[in-house]
Length: 314
Image 1 (cartoon, rainbow, N blue to C red):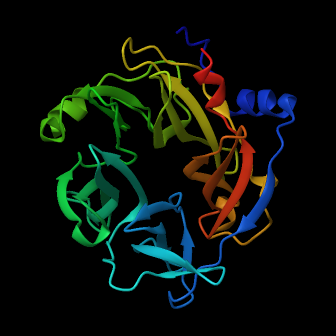
Image 2: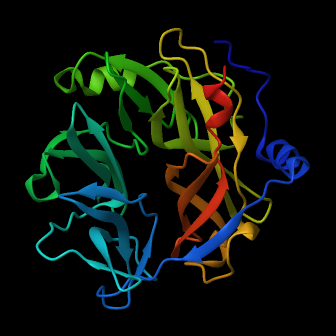
């Protein structure tokens, strides 16, 4: 299975490629969340089943704050409400996966910077359990690393990293494999090789969700982002594929842009053009539903062509 990898492309180049494809984004819908004291809910996961019920985890936050909780929601009469009795996690940007049948939930934890006064540091933390009610913390990632993800590869576990600083600049994706969750460690994560040629140094990105495809390839749903000359942020949902057996990977492709979703409010003016991939639900008819945080203030769902179908025919 040969994956196509060309020279690195900027967000501007990826936008031009995407515009030429004239991709159809349909059935856009704002998700309504209640029972959270009028706070914003954004950067949601895709729905997942827990004890026979569909659940969405979402970042719940006041408009003027970065301090958030992850709340588990269930749908009642067309609205998503906090699930009674479910834990609340003091995290940002939730995600989930299943490893050997066990539920893994995680997010970004912020805490006082160990050196800089009045500054914050962040890391990715993981919980595990047979269901939401039994989740217990089991791993904290390196200081300063968001977008750390795990995926069950059947014969091993894939680890997607995103260092910043000397190794990763503003944020680049790395990939490695481990034999079990017990093998996960900070040194291993810090030593994971980067996927070179995915991001220019002035831009950044990260993995949001990983899908094991029918042919053994790994489909990565993520985001790529940049600043413009005014300092405004631009976030785009994207995909690419990795061959876990060889380490080969494909070019990044955009799968949607902000103006294809419904208009809405933004947390700040510099965040208006933000689509933060949360999760993807694939369908047998060649489409998929993308769940995303919009402008750091809302959550929306839309139907797009299944972006991973192209990799399953290789």
